[in-house]
Length: 234
Image (cartoon, rainbow, N blue to C red; front, top):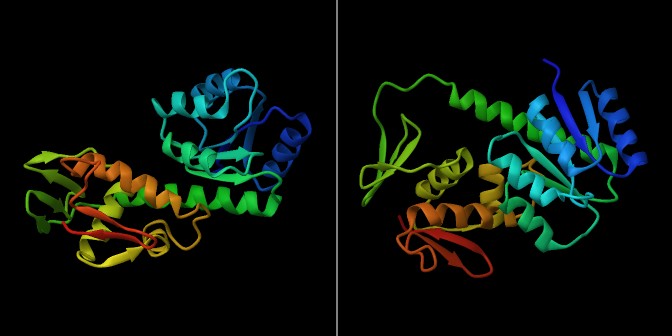
């Protein structure tokens, strides 16, 4: 099935170039130039992916992402002309799935888009897989991972984990007590073809701590190993 992509870019020449190249790749493409139109079109179009420029007139890409994330879970690939790490981290924290810094090659952009769409397809297939009959659990004190139901509970209460948070917790649980580098976590949980940096791991660890730690500011389950990565104590 042909995928629909919304491109949000205020620079006319770049917008037209992106639309042209995406259509050449076989995508259905809509293009808009500002944040307000991006929000309106995204809600009407329900695209499979959004390519979103950070610096937009009126509402910027950060705010567009915040607003859309309240209603939509579709992947967002953020474009930024600023090679500032803080921009990338903020973008990931508010819900962007990946980023690419201008100037970029069309080949790299297409590879990132394909990788994001592939991850969505895999997540959807995993979510729709039949439930395993036998009950399998990983019990870590009051935290229980139900492998059959793909859910996590603390003191019997189900935690609202996102798919990647669940995968991250499960991977760490299987390596309890071991020091795991950020790069290894990134490779095992996100896949070798994921184009985001290791800061993605830090962001998701912070989200996970907020849900499984009694005091996220002083974690006892997911321990930071300075300069290396993390150790999961359960």
